[in-house]
Image 1 (cartoon, rainbow, N blue to C red):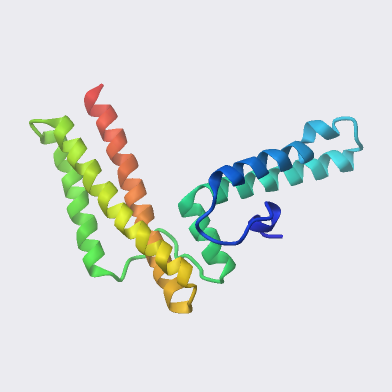
Image 2 (image 1 turned 180 degrees about the vertical axis):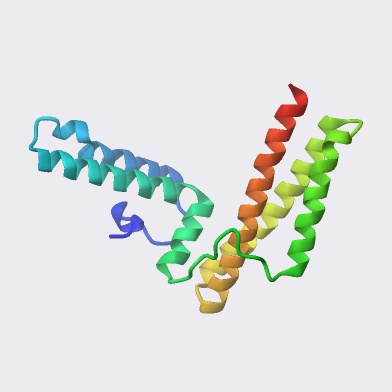
Length: 174
């Protein structure tokens, strides 16, 4: 049973997160291990397994990048490891530019402005790539799924870089 089936929702990228949350809470109440505290060991173990599965499914489906990765896995598209190199030289150059931009923030005369500018750049580029991935996922052809997979890898880079920016901002402003 896949994660979409657990919640009895259509297997698609764009989800109603409120509906997902409501279904999660309803299912979780029915399978929560506390409900089986007086049951047999087997019933308790089964409840723990079901509860864990429901939690994993919810955590995956509520996060857009995890959801995209899951959908691609259901479609048989394997994600390369994060250490695998990109064959997109333009994106490799962009990664280096963004890393340099991040490194230069600590030497800026106006750290707040530099952090804000970097955040704006990351959010803008992330959003553009995210929209492209959504289109590719909705097309659901071998070629569009492969492109969605490449987009997803790039989105993960932006997500990590944004986390690094947040950490840098915290360390510089403390």
